[in-house]
Length: 340
View 1 (tube, rainbow, N blue to C red):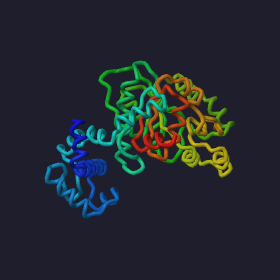
View 2: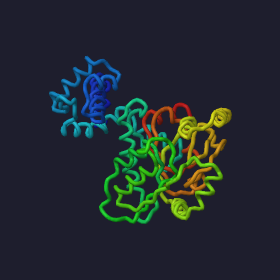
View 3: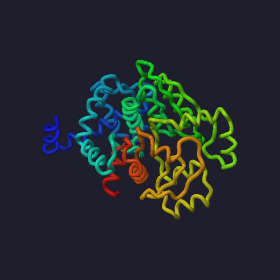
View 4: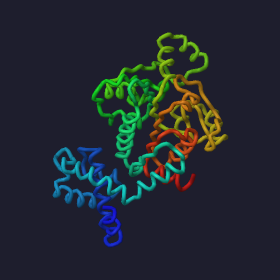
């Protein structure tokens, strides 16, 4: 198969470009279905006439169904997407990119998915699917599994498969809640993952943005202290990786705090700590749950993040914990390989 693709690149390179385009269309329809042609053209940022032509072809091949509600991928189309995935990976050299990134970062394991999360929304589902498989391969019976919040963690929860037997796993939020989107809060993701795994779980009913005085008061609550004590025993952790500036905004930092991060060139955030590219801590906030010291000691850690803009943050956190595993996308991987 590899030899055939290499020959096609030389003899009929336009055929491979067309294959990628149609694969891209199918993947986007699958994410947004049912979706109309005009809306799809806008999301793909290509002309409606071109989309109409390609949709007509895919419909004739019984890969797409078009009705009054919009377009949907047929069962045959879903199978074609699945079969094409490996060919697309070969075309883009993603397996080689994956190996090179793992060697560069010195990590235990790296998995790269095709695409750019910032431009192709189906990449979020791919990140979640791959991370879900890796998580289920990693977590063992009797373990305490820690989970952070965020859109990538919600995608992991969505893509988990139910366990066939009771593994006596306990799922806990790695930190308190922050931000305004309930569906992305750590507590929400924890409950979803626990249901999929048939696991026990604890929720942490406290904000991650507490003052020192409020934090001391909260820790006096026996119920919260019990949850914190369990969180501190986390043996497997799945977490998102944030840019320092994005996380500062989500935490509603003051102008003075943001100026401090800019002054010291903070690029990444993890568990309330803000880091420069060389791993120096330039700012920290009091948080509930796992702190950076705890993170450093956890044996099984899976970081999940994508998009070229997160490359520097991913690079920074990966260098702080070489034994971790990483699931990222093609755009972030290429950016790290080129510039860091």
